[in-house]
Image (cartoon, rainbow, N blue to C red; front, top):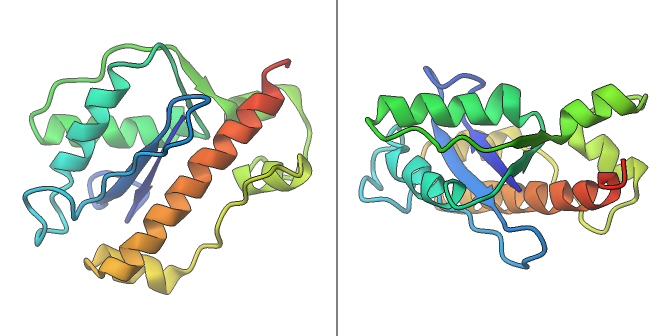
Length: 167
């Protein structure tokens, strides 16, 4: 299960602030941030974030995302090639956003909507755009909130996966 949080909707003008992932059924969410690497002062250098994620990704049997085939995965791939890092190993992808589009007819296909529809135990955190902008400038408390947001996304994703498995 994994998700990214970035400063923009494309990799050319955006920076990946953090990538959260967890192994199915395990309690811990790993979420390295742009401030964890050797370039802590450079908010444009997300090399270490994608490098750490690629190590974990290459160990999985398959990966599960929400809109990841269209957003998260291309963002990570673009950053990997930009930073001269090797590509991710080919893995089967389970994009639950595609599942909702193919099998169900809800009012919205957003992860937050499905969290509410299914009355799941974990909840997504609200988006606060000022916090997001401060995090993009390296404000540690704001980035901590973005990590909390990413952690919640990954946990909700796993909850949805559990409910969707029979489908």
